Length: 83
Image 1 (cartoon, rainbow, N blue to C red):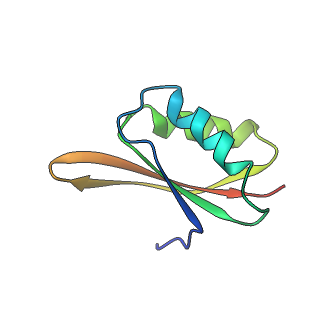
Image 2 (image 1 turned 45 degrees about the vertical axis):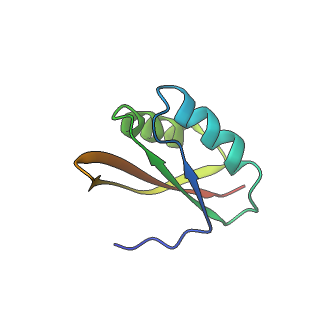
């Protein structure tokens, strides 16, 4: 599935909890309905984003995927601002 996104946040190299902290700050600056693509290298971000999306009132986790780039795994998260 290809997700349309409006903005990208690159948090490669950031360790827990910084990918989520930076995402929360960025998503709150986006208009309602916009989708943020987050690119992370922290494997723990997958579970972190799932947990956050279950409890947050203003976001929806549309999709997550893992891709390889130059032999390293990248974790892609697509977060939609809903309120």
